[in-house]
Image (cartoon, rainbow, N blue to C red; front, side, top):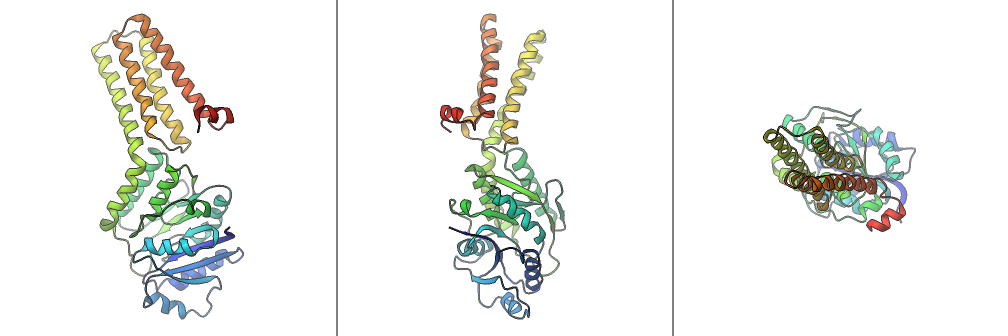
Length: 345
């Protein structure tokens, strides 16, 4: 069983100009809390180690850990995961782009039940200053689309300033072996496996010293792989909804004499389908392939409504409206023991 301890994982590569300032910043923030700072390096000649040895007032919580998995920041972070003893594991970058002062709040969220907590640049209260324009655009676009479309519980899925619970890391296989896409991988896996993903506002500033090791074009395919894993089903659902709506518009254009009752019924179908998905996204629930049947079923009901006799129209109206209300009620009450038993959740 892990200790009640904050484990800071600090992957380093040629961070001689930043290491002293970074370690002192972490120590000043965490000195009153049980913690360890794991400096994960790859090779013995890294100038970071020489700069660390020259620090006269080294924080007593620092532990040097040599990366045994292979080159790259993802492997350094994996080495830190293996060496960490704490119940809360925080990945932090040595360039001090992220503020250490946010770590206690992230820790509190983990200990309150969250499994992944992002230091979020893109939520209300967060901020982002500097950095390459293309990298900033792709990061923001990915984070916001994953939040609003896929229902991932953070506006910022790519930032590596992250806190993880020990229980989560013990149950997930880390596949990343190269770049910083490890944060996106673990966030997507937490979302898809039903773990709680949360966030807290954070401010990011581009490094003031040293050279960034980020390789956008080299690592972009790995980022896209995990992005697509989270987005595939939600995009299919939204595509169905768009098709569903466009078909209705075309039918109205071909049949202008639709009465008010027909219009109201179609409006109910469209809104019910839309709010079904929005409810799932607002609850940050993982959408699964069976969810794609909801818009499809409503689309089929719509088609029958326009092609069958009046009596069947009335039946379809009632059945579809009751069905949508029933699905919404079951979802809203999904945590009740009886409903769990019925749905076998």
